[in-house]
Length: 294
Image (cartoon, rainbow, N blue to C red; front, top):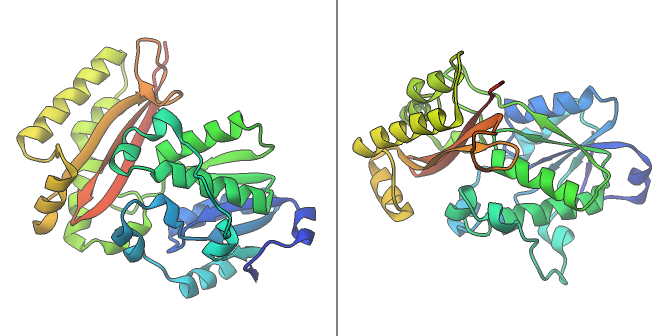
């Protein structure tokens, strides 16, 4: 594996499969890399904790980093290039404007983290400019991010094939995330309560005839239950305050049309339930997607 701080012109002559990461790698990342390796293309994995997608300086500072461990794991996976640029190389002295993620980028995760997706699209665009990959892969766990990047690639007519990686979960069902390292054992169990809650998962996954209005009603009922038990927060401030004792707080819980990332209708076929919240002050996200035929 070759560790590079900058992209050289000779690398452009190779067909590169790009796996962007912020490091602190886990089995979820490894599954993306393994999928990339199957393509037969040269693989390039980036590790860059992008400051422009953090609206909270403390969150940026405490984001887990372990470049030495990551390098060892990537070597074992036979990655061709590890790209570890510094901020100046990515943005330079003349950087001015962030790309806009539009209306959808201001909803849900973007509403709780203002400017987050502008920062994501900006760094992704910059990495595309530098690396010029043939293929790129993003995980499905960050559903809104995945939607916005797919939309951006389509709108800008970039000649890049985007692949989607399945969510990888631990043995208890919690979606793997670099932030999980910051949770206690109790916190992980608490997180599983809502991300894989049977009252949420089972009705949506159950076989049989369903309608968009029926699914929306089921989800609204679940949200009412969470509200009654104090598990849904109406403000980020209250969320953080109550999490001092490790209590779970849900920021949002919505069912959307997966193809448009907007409100469902009777014509919706592909559904996605998105959920985000705080456990022990750590922000976690997850989703469930499914399709209804007929």
